[in-house]
Length: 591
Image (tube, rainbow, N blue to C red; front, side):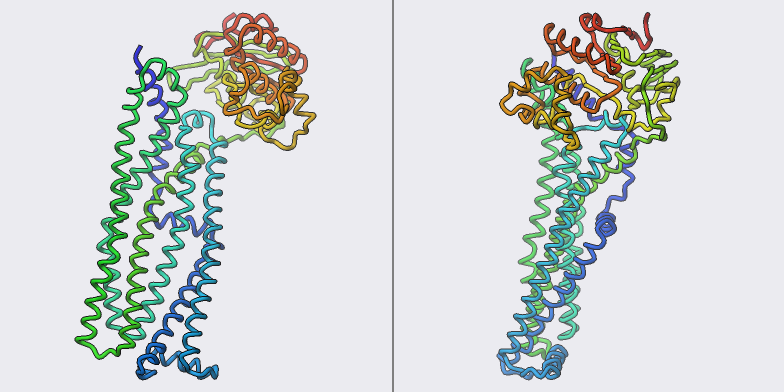
């Protein structure tokens, strides 16, 4: 037996809904659309941040401007040959502050310290907002996943969703942080450019030309980075989906010595991912390393031209050189941060695309009637198909009386689980009706109806948490007495009391500290704690021995005195305890 079915099962889970793909492809994925989202979603915080960063930039510019009169004093040059000096001297004169070197240096230090304080508050706001960004997007993703249609949810790759919540959410927050840092650099560039114009307009034009030259020089690199980042995000999601899917079948892979096949299956994806990462990191380093030679070259040429062809004073030349150096470095920092922003952008759009796809598949319920189940569930002429032309249920009609134990049997693929899902309202039949006490199911408030149902899945997976939290799903509204009552009804009281920490015992990952029968009983207790009118169990005895199976069915038989129970099973021993046996074959109910 080959491992082809292993690979096929992995590849099957990669298929997404066409509609979801269209939504993802039609989103306006560009940097400015992302900036617009941040601004509109976190408007007040973003406005405050921009204002603080602007004030900090102005304060730094004013502080650096004091270097001009300070240099004039140190070099013994005239004090009012520039507009900046004129303004500073006029302010000092109005405030009756003596124009001494001490006061000039004190003023410079004061403005720089004020700039530090304002910048600290601004970046603290950025840090707080970044954490809000990631929390907001993660919660939005979780909410839209939980509200999505069941038919869509079953096709949603768990690995992709996990990666979006963890890695992509963090990178989306980094995008906001990088955006604010980039904005800070841009504001400083504007301030330094304005000050430079006040000293020498033609040298300032040269600096402006330098900035534009840097932008043009690195633009192609930016576009290349965007493509590489998008490709990296895409293949990282694909790799995580494949890895997540394959972990569930790692035992047959090892049992049949197919590790090399499995490795080859993932190797191609890792190779493409490596190529994208290499290209992205090479572009990033090119931009970073470009700073020093470019700035020094242009500054040297500028100084040479100023000395040879202008009459600018030594003081002005020194301050202009400082302005130019700071402005050039900030321009390159701006380019570097913009480069980083483009890298994070791909993760943001990947996360946002999944959120929008989930929203488009939101489960809609038009019903508003409060459900009451006291007498029967009437299923009439129900037809259902997942794929057009391949009917799974064909003209199914059943009457399920309240407070009875039903067993639903039949070969695999006969529609047993689908019938249960229709009763739950997870699927809508193409034709026919389901009525709860003569009330159409689609007219009921679906959330209230499901709150009246207890459901136990076939795998009985538990959370890596305490028994109490597994029984309540973390709902703190349940008291300890209610938890213990549910455990007692599920027949789990004896083994729970024998545990060292009782209901506070941690069950381990997926409940692996408990036996199959114990996990089954905790899952039943989880279904019973909300006091359901209807209890549904999908293959509850498939992993149990005959003794444990008999004990479980005795428990269910006793519970059926107070609620309606439907058990999906292939076991003949289960049918012996049932009040009624329903046999499904090829989508039909057989007598």
